[in-house]
Image 1 (cartoon, rainbow, N blue to C red):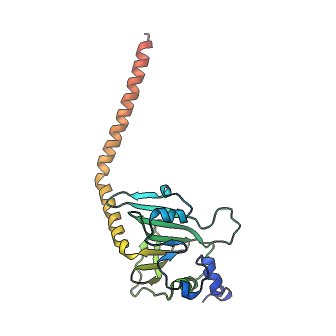
Image 2: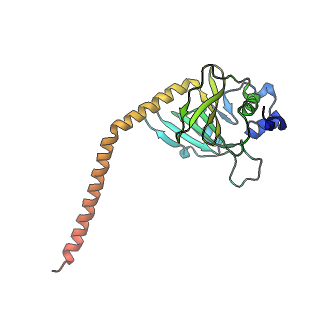
Image 3: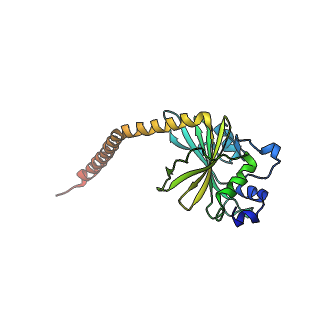
Length: 231
């Protein structure tokens, strides 16, 4: 392990990454939650724990299923409390049920940490990590960067993936409720297909609405200017 890993205790690193230090019997292998957020919980309950209003959840898709996202920042801007490695947490809902938790780590707060450092710290909460049996499939990120699954923690119902992006580089931890992962992915794919199919009609409707607005504006201007026009 790198020098950084040798100079910081496992408990300190675990706390730094935001998992807290709890007795092993009470916390290890409980893959159903991250901090106070439990996978499978309804939106109002999760929003309350995040100090937010359910109405703040962003609608990603409305059909064929309602997909929403709520963002939570562990550390309030300007706070003088202990520095957080977790920059932000994105909570995703499928028909109002929390099915995915994405913890994005701050690149500067994790600078110098090796994958082994993070795996060791996360394992203190979620148990023994398993590396993907097959080479992790690289996936394009938001800006064309590549993402790689470094380690996994899972049971029959839940899974957490530690992912490294080539951009930065940065790390993130993604937890999912397995039974809703596939339906949510399928719903997102179908929503994108529907949007693409309806895009031409939406554009035509937009142009027609703009034309109607312009006609109405010109007619009002005509009424006003006609009455006062003098050659």
